[in-house]
Length: 168
Picture 1 (cartoon, rainbow, N blue to C red):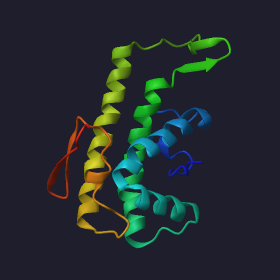
Picture 2 (picture 1 turned 90 degrees about the horizontal axis):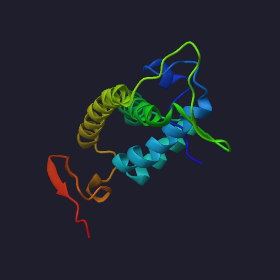
Picture 3 (picture 1 turned 90 degrees about the vertical axis):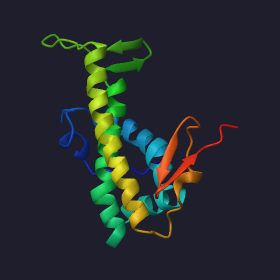
Picture 4 (picture 1 turned 180 degrees about the vertical axis):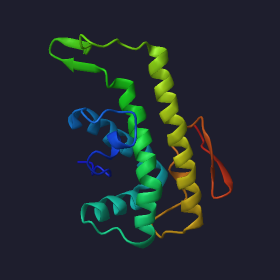
């Protein structure tokens, strides 16, 4: 089970997502973003330490700074981006449906894409800040993420060095 690294309502308080969204609907977006992106950036060892310390309410010193100032905004905007991609849809035995209350108007895909891109830009900015901070403060659990890159098309600047992943 994934430790959700956000406290209650942090996602809805800090994004355009409404506070009346059922937590069960967006907790999947948070968990997916953490597993897909946050663990990739931090590396498995540091990610696991942050999760354990968060669960035990034991984040201190640089780890608390890392969590509060860099991870939380990164997770918030990345999770909002993930949620915006599927939040309007419901999948159940009756098929895939889109909720449309009587007193509202559905937005088209270009408007949703705009919202997703706004969250993506913020998430990428916070990711960049996070990576710069990790290079500046040498935490023993952090290993340069040149070994953690998953996407073979991307190159990444880590601690002042470019890393290109071999696609084979």
